[in-house]
Amino acid sequence: METNEDIFKLIKILTRSVVNDSKIESEYNGDSLVMGNTKYILNQTLRQLTLPDENIYISNKAYELWQKISPKNYDIREVNYKQKVICENDEPIKVKVYKGSNLTPEKEELTLQKGVEFVYNDVFHEDHIIPVSQIIKKLCELEKANKLTNDNILKILNSITICKMLKDEDRNIHERSKRPQSTDEIIDRIYGSKVQIRRLIDIENEKTL
Image (cartoon, rainbow, N blue to C red):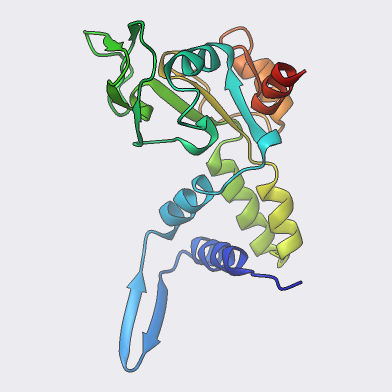
């Protein structure tokens, strides 16, 4: 079976650049290209990885709202950030809207009903349960130990879990970067009673029974 290691190669190049605090430089036909700010690029690269279903969680409130808004035309696994979503629900639904990283919602709630378009990230939030900064730290530790192999990279990437929740719920979680190393421990200690979550695949499997 033919394999493709491009993503592993990319992560190795970026991680080594971060560890060495250096820019990435390339030359071709006498021309040179230089890329800096590689820690930011590595961060964004990790955020764009497609995760296995068992690594995707969703809050009860977010799931309930999504089922009202758009259960047919959109798979919430594939919707994120600035993607626009068109509401399918006939009955009006009022939701709180947060612009960018604002900690407080807009004064006026958004009324969603059939045909109304909204930006996913204005209403929903995608929280990396184990912060991406911790994932980068683990990759850098492997590089420093000369153990940045594909197998070791894969073990770390498989530990990435996300939780889709309402922006309103996210604003009640204050521990952003200093979190335990275990997903289960974070869910128990950090989310606690603030956000009730479940694996998305578990909810869907129950519906098919």
